Image (cartoon, rainbow, N blue to C red; front, side, top):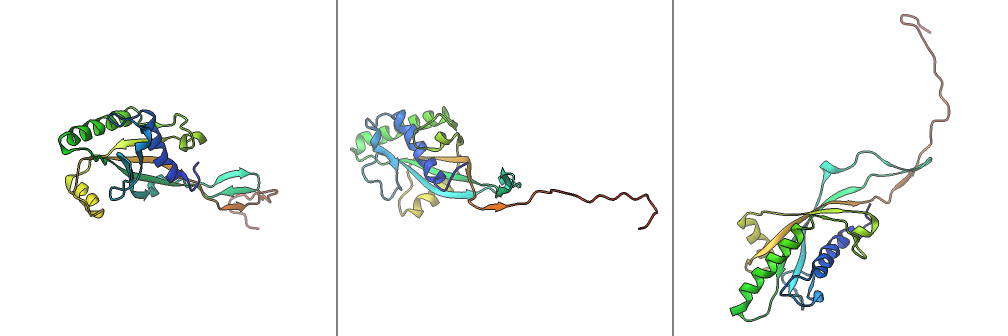
Length: 192
């Protein structure tokens, strides 16, 4: 299960996967990174976490047994919502075609990696965790709202949801096991 770094690790996992497969025409992996659309730095391809949702329907109801005398609260389950966008600074004559090639390549790479658990270094998968990443079909109005939240005009981008992310609780409680029991047997109709 994930620690509090699981949210950050999920974003790093996506970036590392895209860097490893080096989306063309981006020639250098370090030009792919976590950023927001209004602050891209030198990145040509940005991965932006724009929403986090707790999944109460997936919350495990039972405590986790640590040992004979300790239990831990169940983990919280999260869905993370990402926007993947281009931030090219090239001439308009070639930029539109390059942006479409990049987005097509990103879609292809992530479609081939729907479950991320292949041992990416320093990320979720190191701890034996796996996360599902799925393409999100959003209505155009929702896309416009997300872009305007950054005070930017809408442009082509891809939306993904990472699900199956667990963040473990740090609360450990001591419990006492039943050591003896007093059982008495009565027949129906008899009173003590």
